[in-house]
Image 1 (cartoon, rainbow, N blue to C red):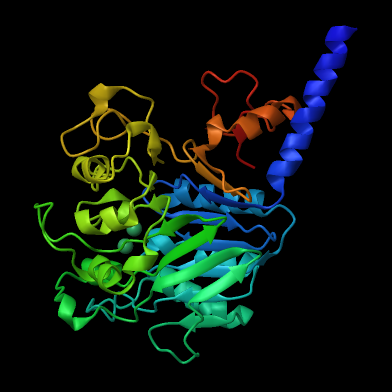
Image 2: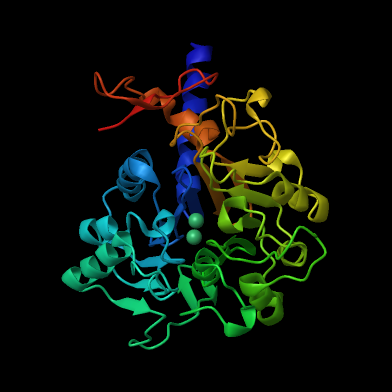
Length: 384
Ligand SMILES: [Zn+2]
Ligand SMILES: [Zn+2]
């Protein structure tokens, strides 16, 4: 009897705990959508912000379009959509989002491949997004053509302060960039969200590091931020620029941000080898970040032999290693007392605590998306 009572008390406390967690917190989920970026943000007042809605190949698109409805629950409105720049790995699912949800406000750079000098013009994903916005009559701020009034750079969502630190309609000529892809990346909208004196900075595919030398001065986006927004850069969590590429996360920039946690959104695609080993080393050398505070969405099944020289050790790149999308989403929570928690979704104690509700395999014959390894009782998720 005694055991039963204490069991009920524990369950009761757990439920209370879950309620207090749900209230008054800023919740950021970085989806594991492979070599792409999609960050979902629930503000303390329940409002929803989405920073980038990228995908990379079909699996990644399925993941994004499965996870957004889960995150939004019964909500049909996205209060703010920020698209850092026009590459498909950041806007691939944006048209879908505009069709499926009521978007209150969308901000994007408008600087597409055509403007960067590509004779094929803008990509289909960009055109799809623009057309979807026209059809759905979305309040769109295209920084490039500035037909609409320039946006408020600071917004308040229930105590969460959203600050757009930079947004460009085209690269500054003083940046002297020649490569088309770099030009497009360099205009990335960089956003900071702060709550209870803790903050997360979202860097899109910002460009910032010129050469192999760590001591070289920052360039392009990171130079702009260092020169103009230095006092605002300090953030507890950084969604690292450009998936952890070596041409961003310059020493001066990351030292100014001085994060406690680093998040890399990357896939196991061999072409990119993100995040680069050198990039990770800069965060550990210049920001003293230990390995347990570095999170990556391409965390493989842990065979270090799968590694190669360019890729940060011990994870998904190279050899015969693969890393499916969907298994390494990252949760960031800031509570109203200033407590900050960062963890992989599949090791989230809150989700584990809910596992008593698990109904097991939901639909027969569907592909397993997210499997448990050692956490007994954790649900297996399946695609619809
Ligand atoms: Zn990208
Ligand atoms: Zn890009």
